[in-house]
Image (tube, rainbow over all chains, first blue to last red; front, side, top):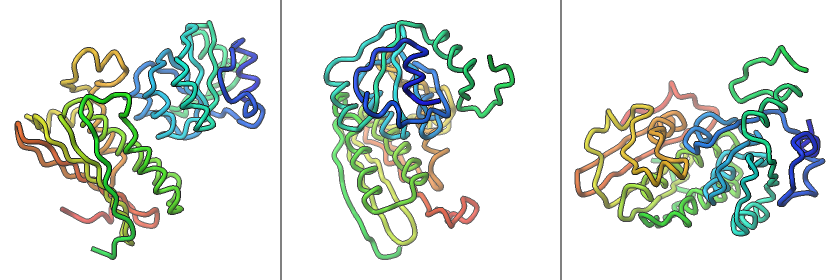
Length: 123
Length: 152
């Protein structure tokens, strides 16, 4: 699924990287509010769903090669964080939906998680 | 050791969270410029970032040294700080001495050293209480597997 389709599904606001949304194919998603776990379990090129808006989340994205970040629960990062992401061509989105519902919508739409577990109950 | 192609040092300041990750970012950019394999670059970057965060969280100051040669990539994270009282305990997933404010930032889950071990082909930790800690990490090029790693 393209990142632009993810944005529409989650009714997300685009903070930066609008021009990239149609180019990025989202194949895997990780949902977490713990950077330590994101660093340990997330696969390269994944999309991260999180409520963490601190600058370290952008550093983390850079280290593990994320394809973008969706901030959940309407959490909006500061201008410094958005600017850091823009410098790295990392799209940032914000959805009002909580983490569980956001992940549920995308999982049902057929996007896998980072564990590699096959999704046999796609909607 | 084989001829050194690159040797760089990056200072790390304890407690400076806004700058935390800058050294790992520079290490990653250096490896990308050298055309190092992307999966290997990712492993080195994650391990270096974890080691850098450990310095920022636990130490007074430190530095990250990157060495690239024909054999592999070598990263040393050394700090001046309180040291690690029990390395075996620190290697356990979930064990952490990080304060609450660090945990609120999403760190301090006790995954740092275990994740470094997972990413690196070679790991050696030397520590002395109230002096500091040195973490040596080695990463081999894709042609060499972990089973071929050299012993320390």
